[in-house]
Length: 221
Image (cartoon, rainbow, N blue to C red; front, side, top):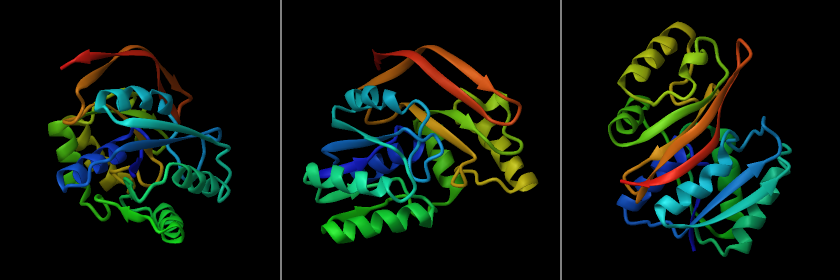
């Protein structure tokens, strides 16, 4: 079984596509839902809507609950991979050695091939591809310079220019590998349908913010 560890964010979605175009077609999406919003491993905002993305992709989907406790959450990944007979695992690892090393260790122990198409990607290359071919919105911000105006915004040329400026001014990682922000993909090349957000709210405390999707539906492209 070829699986993708799928959060619904820009990196796992782009990795899924890159692997597909390289001849590795995911048969299963595994989404970890962490009870800990500060998990070291897992994306949290709007992850429940990954089931809608799976439907748009036409790929089987498994939601796996985890307490999100540091290191212990890795056991939950291992169980999910074993239970679903995974032989190849696609992940959206970009630059976080913390995450990649732990996934590598699990895969090595289970005899699973770890495929990380985005590892070491140039940030501008990824952002440009997202801007041109995807509808990915920012759903969480928690870094200096990232204010309420980013919440719910599509990653387009305008947002990219702002991220470049913030990188120069504050040193933020433009792909959010330091936890600066999170994202959610509403449309992508392999989506048979696009996701339309019907209702959402913004939460902002002056330094940390979330864009919470409350209701959405699929629409034909």
